[in-house]
Image: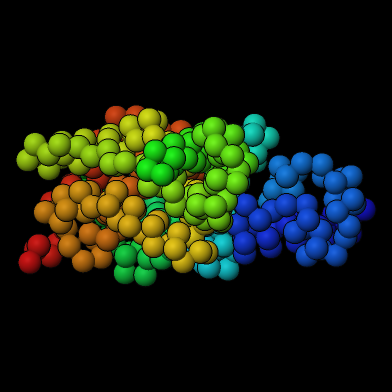
Length: 180
Length: 180
């Protein structure tokens, strides 16, 4: 069963990221995994089960190893996110999870994966910002990679990523009220 | 035919935004529109046709009427985008379009709708930024609304929207190199 589960999970993830969440059906996943539809229906009765199983196979999200220099660590983290869109198609994982978020179980999985994805970025930004500006900056730096990808199928180059980090850090340096 | 088209387009958009792009099937849209599946298959043979038709019914995207004050206009534009997520479920339109972007026709429709959506924001930001910082800022301010919505099903409050605009404008004011 563990091997079946692994095979089916990997196949479901491949369908999700290559063909889109719409394509994640018992028939398609069974075909790709080399199991019968009956086997799939027995263990994972609903399409939500298949999507959840696919996300199980996602593995560790790509993160940057911190050097201690905030600017280069932020740039590295955004580059790692960009690499995850290219290598793991995290853009399709993101939009696929959003499509299924009307189901409570999927919403919980989505929130968990996305919070883990944003975690290191948030921790770094806490060194420079707090309150509403921290919340804004977390979404803004996520957005510099996620938005062009989801909206236009393009990715920011290194110059645009560095510009985004500089906008946030320069702003933090010059804001009127002191940090605390 | 014009009336049929309008009825089916509105039904398809309703299915897309209420139930997700996955639910946009001939059977479901025919049921909601009150037409036969045969009628739908005759005029819109594929599911891509139904999604494209739904987007036809989207109408004008919500935008802010400019006052001339850059800060309040940027805040107003982001609030209008946030309102579009609440009222028109633009988050589901965004992720639904992304799901179908492997089809060339859908990719073109997506790019057109998203470029129109970001247009006024870009025009405003051109007053304060250029080059890589302009590209970064367009994605960053889109992201402050789009990212929490797509990733967690939440929306930024007015304070977070204002903080995002202030991060960008403060940074533009204090950058080392002059604007030109």
